[in-house]
Length: 341
Image 1 (tube, rainbow, N blue to C red):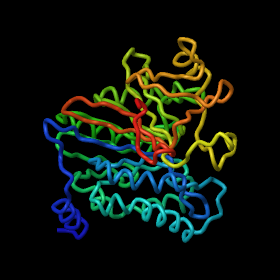
Image 2: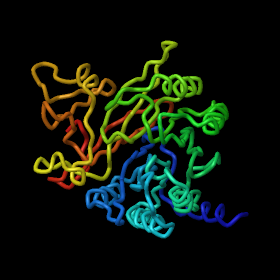
Image 3: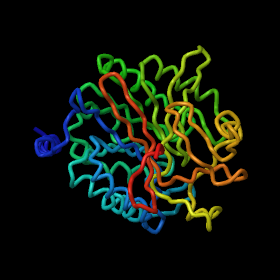
């Protein structure tokens, strides 16, 4: 037996995490856009959130990319990129030490240049170990792969632009066919199939959406846009694919610095999104997500940003069904709270 496989087995045997019973749902916390600063700093909001997630004890934590802040014009050394990922691993170490499985996917800021891609790959060489007891099926891990626990199948994808790479598409098609007998299939990537803050790309939707629909994926879960949203994407053939955008897990909102990049790194919803889901019943600052019915307030009528950050999505899976419950770290109470509270 290979060393990494033996290590994964030992972790699985020691771990208190197991497939949910019929009476208890499998819970998956989905985080995105941690954005470690170029100097290696991690926001105190994310450090606190990681600690609170240990108390929540989910059956997995999925991170859907942009854990770092790499950019196309970076002139960084491999050593600096390694330092970014080392800082991330320290920040999520409470989860790993609590035997809470962690499953990463890449984001655009993690993969712009070869030095970024190499750093991401090196950071998760121990994927089988930190993901145990989930069983990993390799595509080109940790860039794309799948994971199974009980009847739940997760496909983690290399979607870092409004483009579906041919290699990822071919593998995903085969992966979903192999998982046809799973109770439920969920797909995770970084970039939304349909943007909720900018003009969507119909070409991307029609390339990606049918693959998910053909594979009977219950939802595509993503990040990138630093906002929380849950709505079906309509395909040209009239089918629908549920899309869940999970927000940023790293930055809190401050009214004093509402326009400052470093202190308010959450993005506005588009005018089109506002028009069909916000401002009802004389409440111009209230939006209600089409799926789930969860509501939230915007910063102002001129700034369509959500106040509730840092945020993440909690998926609760029971057999062939699941619920998506948006959560946030309330800076006042220091607790994880539901958008319903």
